[in-house]
Length: 263
Picture 1 (cartoon, rainbow, N blue to C red):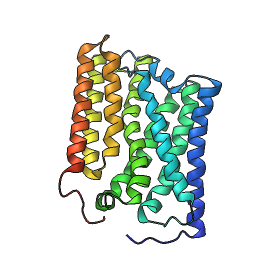
Picture 2: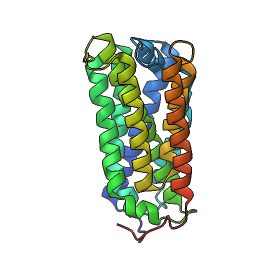
Picture 3: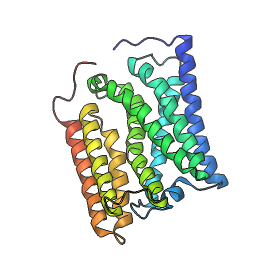
């Protein structure tokens, strides 16, 4: 791919990416330090009668935030070339970062419908351009900086949102009695796990990037830990999902012939 020095408008976009990253991180840490409203873990634990995830699972945000800082700071450096991926994913990442920042606010004040809109919106605006750039992503050399400093941070975020969004929805639906009676609460939880597992494998098959599946496997493992005592059957379904995602992601990512022509 051609690498060019950023123009002033491109540099402006990069600085907006940095500002959005700072916003997303600062708003989350401010909620933790000042303890205003509910934390994300407390929000998820409210009305979690259908599907529960262990609180420790949310510690993955520290890893995601760290990688997002790498992504944003690298872009803020004028010597970083303007690659096609940086350009295509810049504004979508801004939208996703603002979305997860405002989600913390919505969760803190228990604005339930707003949390659903924000988390699914953040996932969509990030995942669509990633999939549209799948050919370019697959063609990146293993050591390419765009792979580790652009694709990995954003696919990790997209992966966590892939499991967090259905959990958010099923939690709110359970608390408000919105789950249709066609399935039991456990049935809806199993369906959600199956859909997340299938999506994890489908997206990984397209992107061939391990970073997408890892947060999903981590979240499903958190569901296994949380549900062992309360709902053993659901716990082992979650464990099976976690194992399937992890093994499948590794095989899909590392199998021969991963690279292809840029899309």
